[in-house]
Length: 264
Figure 1: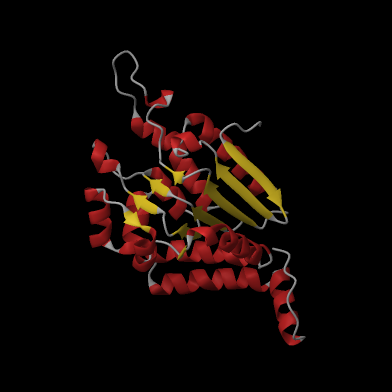
Figure 2: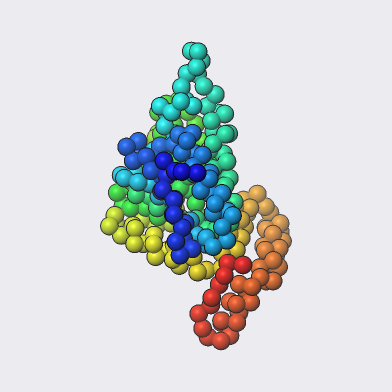
């Protein structure tokens, strides 16, 4: 697929996906969704990729859905089925990110609004520039947070703060987002790119499968009892205990050297 709305590259085991509609704050269209799906499929099928970095071009990360896209237009005087747009595009996007075979980093270089917030929160680690902010804009147009917003927010910041963010649609500055536990880290604007690059290189040489199992275990915990989660963890420990990366990690520890993980 020839990309027109995203930039995508793979180098040194790091995949980089940039939402590239800067004049529209990288808001989503049907066409951009198709390109992102194609890029994520490539990552899923390319064993050389060990980490994904997602960011936005220009002055913002993502402003959510482009309301001017034809999929949002009225047809014969009838309002479109917005729920179908969510089911067709956003639900698959979030599920792909949540189940991707490599760890994911979101680099928030400016405003993340609406579905753009949830796309970021679907990634394993979120880093943001100090000038960045997060906005649940849905209530301003009579809608409810979608793309997993009502799932991510209460888990990250608690019910009281999640309700305030969703109902009042107030911008949350990146520094406060870090303080509230919504994101992993907030850095100076001029340090975002280098910090993300350093983190991506670090993850690219770590035991990939173990990192993904950590994600899966964390995601499962809220629906499990303690006893169920202990058994769930044991299953992953059993699987990983037979993996080449575990053998390499133990050997490197015993030999007092740096491990050389392969992601298997």
